[in-house]
Image (cartoon, rainbow, N blue to C red):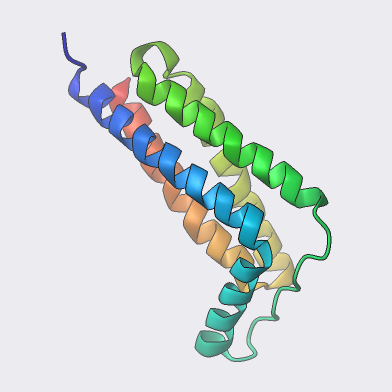
Length: 139
């Protein structure tokens, strides 16, 4: 017997999410400062000196936590994609993660004005909303 439409779409989104979080996690891990440089370049071109440039990271303490969180998102996505009916409640963990990061990115953007924080909010915010949409549809 096939999945109901909402569950099928949630499964599809979780497959996409697993790949997206996996490759983004690798990019963060191996090209952390390259990402910040690219964001700074875009900020300089679009906004000149309106926003300060975010400094490059000189240590790896937070990168370890970022990598573990991205792997956790991959694992959640794989579990839900593998059996959405059984693992649907795991999506709540992913939603809390994306809501938290979006809120904190907005807070830090308003506080420090780094364009990189706005990019983070404009990335994680839509991911939260899309995931929430498919989660609610599957219920």
